[in-house]
Image 1 (cartoon, rainbow, N blue to C red):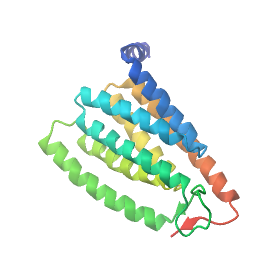
Image 2: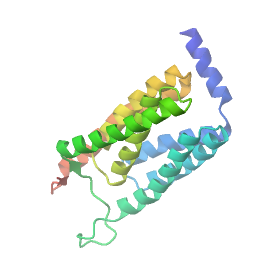
Image 3: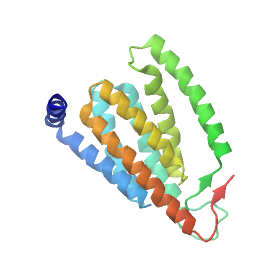
Length: 211
């Protein structure tokens, strides 16, 4: 236990000022997203911009590319949350929360799993990636989950619970102890976010269940 505390302290001391800012903004993004605040997307954009540069400078090119995607999704999320589909008669009305059927999620999950297995095979056999399959799995499902957040699909939080839980295992095994603690917090926040959104959806006068 003492060794773990020392490793956590060393990790904190090794963090740059930019990394602290990125972590704070990432936590802010989660809190604001759970509260359906549009300001979650500017927080997401700035944090992922910082992470893009940090990962690029650290030669973590795949993580850097993933954060470029996150930056693009921050723009899409802002636009999507501000505007309802064209069928709505309201102008600049905020996008409502929706819930998708389990059949739809099974289809999405199956396709994403196949893609992650293919990419995981490539990473495992043609790169020096550690935990290639698990790392690729979390990356692929993170892309899907981010899109679901942008569309305000309730179940996005359940995706993040699984993604963040696996990420904790990966980061612990890679020695990124402080990051693993952060992702434990993310996992808890994802459960809270799901409960917040579900409560809002249940209180809606019109069911937003998209088949």
